[in-house]
Image 1 (tube, rainbow, N blue to C red):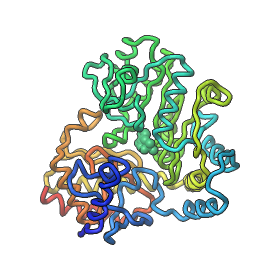
Image 2: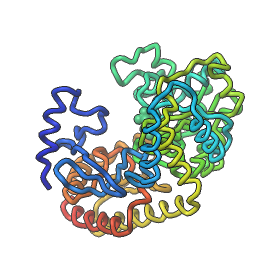
Image 3: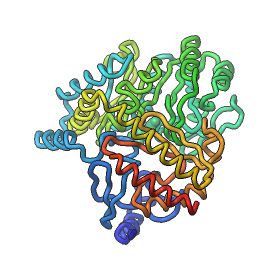
Length: 428
Ligand SMILES: *Cc1c(COP(=O)(O)O)cnc(C)c1O
């Protein structure tokens, strides 16, 4: 496979864009080589500037649940654009998508739309702090909630120590209000809550983690968090930016039958346009401006093109009763195929899967939290990644990412993927 034009475009881009990319995960720093420049995409495939075709398992990092250039989404956006692209005034379609979202997701009365998952999570914790009149939050190591200051905290070796920023520019003052816990470790959370009595506004979690590979919660973990929150006046925030409208119409709340207090959305809810949202019961949402004291705003929030794309997406998901099942079956088929291919070649691995999310870890231990995810063999992953790329299969250029299965993938595509892995595994 040749990447001549991509390489030339990357050289150009680096002169005017830091690192040549507008989001660092698009760079190939973790795997080596130069990023591939996309030109177009349709269904299960993305095409690059050199004319190469890839079976796509990134899918814009989540949004394209139904495949690229999904016709109802594309048509809705084109129609809307002809009527004007932004007004800074309320529009009917905002209420229409809000009504549909509220009908699909359990335990929410109202929803507010923003422009990204980052904004959704940032606003959700401000709302939680305002509502509870407390300052601290607990997040889990390895969970990603966007790039706002409060969430860029990774260190903090002792469970009870304050977090320290892992990006320059995040102040110690901000970092001290973010406490770090281990995913799937309820005792750890209890200790933190005990040590910070009456100071914690919210626990925020990816209820199925997707940003350290795919890590489902162990039995009882989410239930335990719910109970801790209830007995300590803490709000439970589910960051469903990745899982919302993906693992079930109502996300993990529905899948695991657990109510969160605030839910964050992004990715699928925008159908590939820049959309985020956060939602909760009336008593919490009515704490927001203009009726409540917590301020939150956005010039382009609820943008008509974005709402049109999101509405077309949600309508399709809501109407297609077989969708979630089909996605899960495809993911399971891929899981079995990958496991067979790697086993045949004695490649040590662990595969995690839930619904349409799957991750392959080159590690023999169960991957249940950030530490176990970090144990994977990165050298093997690099070889695997480039092997896949050269066979026309695009997975994320990082060992810590989930693969996203779309409805557009056919069993032929899956078989092609499995055959490629059988081949690659011989040289791993
Ligand atoms: C992608 C993601 C975000 C951030 O969303 P952006 O739209 O990239 O700002 C937040 N939380 C989770 C769980 C995500 O996967």
